[in-house]
Length: 52
Image 1: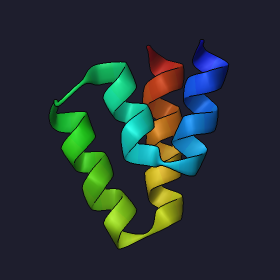
Image 2: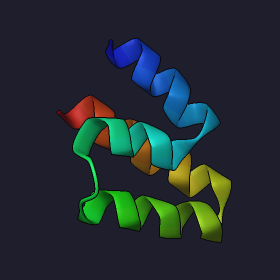
Image 3: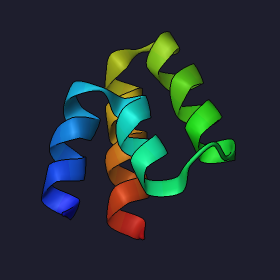
Image 4: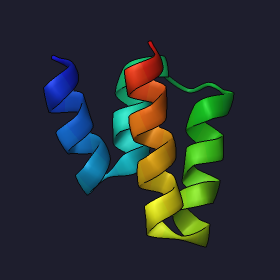
């Protein structure tokens, strides 16, 4: 299941974080990072998914 979440995180980083943690601080941080740059959003999303 984590592999599917990582693939989703690469395509849509906020969705991958949402599937892992829901509407928490990490989700909103990921939206901000994705808006500032797509790559930071991907890195943060993969880090959140791999950490848990």
